[in-house]
Image (cartoon, rainbow, N blue to C red; front, side):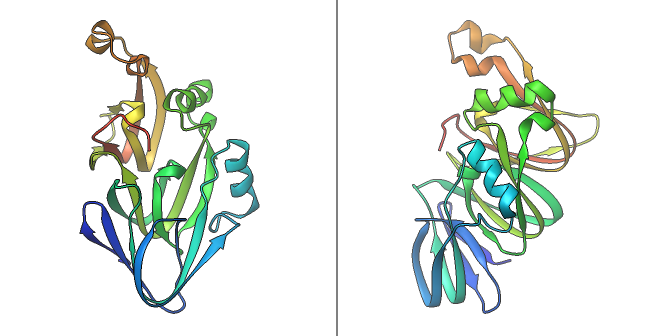
Length: 216
């Protein structure tokens, strides 16, 4: 794996000749060796459609390409960082939560309305994360950011997982998602209106949830 954890809010990446990393601009904290950082106007390996998807949704997250030979330390905003290793499947993650990922992964976008129809679009509005989400597919490592740490919840057939939409970070595997309404004790005691919605994920895979309802 390219990434190693320094502490809960910093990671170190090993950069080798012939390999490429992508990271959020401004996420580099320090580096050693012969390493170059180049603004990436193509948004990773997603191509033109990937760029258009994020621009339509006003979700473009500036990336930089990291190449050379050395080590780089990454962190951003004091957020907690979780390293996720993909072994051929697809990770669905909000663009602003991406800290860095290996260039072996294929980046794209998915229209949330394609999962759950109209409710998929409502999900984007409720979370404030828009109608598109970023996808990373293949074999490689991804570093994502969250408030208060991240925990992984397995999703198994016949046992769907319900998540507060504002606590959702990412998910991977053969998973379907839909938004459902749920009026419970939080609504009765006057918590935020977003509590009336739950994101239901079913199938086989895992969802990553942050220990907070704050947006990045």
